[in-house]
Length: 139
Image (cartoon, rainbow, N blue to C red; front, side, top):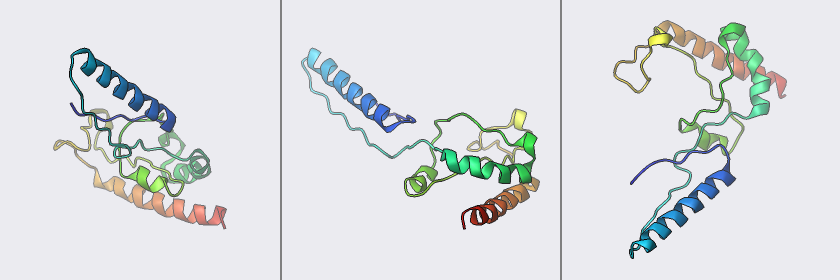
């Protein structure tokens, strides 16, 4: 059996790992068997935005995209490489939104995903705006 365990809190993750280990061992023992369990920690981390950095940089994103187009989303359990960077420095992950029709968009990992490349300019503008504002605010 394989799967991923993604939590928003390291202590909760450790509790879940201990609970799974306990259940696997007890079920195996009840059947007169032994179980081998491997849990690889830290390979599918949850993407997390630093709250202070997010609050500081939201005005920059609003300048580029407009107030009505900047939405703070609740936590999502999608995994990215990004969390490995935020282990070392505060980070801010955001979606640029390049789907041709977001209401009918396929997942970006789907062969049916269609990107509206005209929106890529907003990605470049937002990264430049974030960099300039961050440097100005944190000099």
